[in-house]
Length: 95
Image 1 (tube, rainbow, N blue to C red):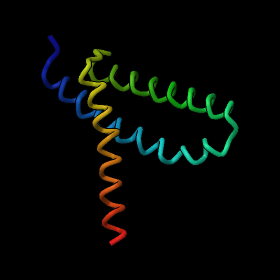
Image 2 (cartoon, one colour; image 1 turned 135 degrees about the vertical axis):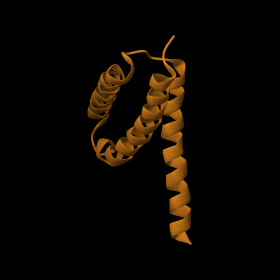
Image 3 (cartoon, one colour; image 1 turned 30 degrees about the horizontal axis):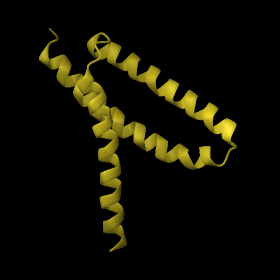
Image 4 (tube, rainbow, N blue to C red; image 1 turned 90 degrees about the horizontal axis):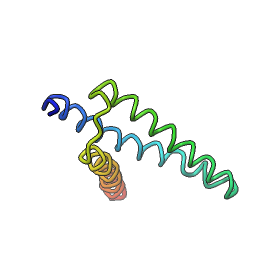
């Protein structure tokens, strides 16, 4: 059984990582779209590979590479929450 403190650290880190992953994709998406299809696939593959490696290195430091389903859910929630926050901010700025 994994300690609750490690689970909490992993959950918070996964939420923040999903949020940061969404920011990085928003920044790099226009640059990736300007290239041809083959470069888009190659750049996307390496971007995801690098982000996954960074994530696994980080969770190794936090929780000894104990990867749970809620980690994936936390990343997805972090990713979605960024989009929601950006949409709310954009609507308020338009007013």
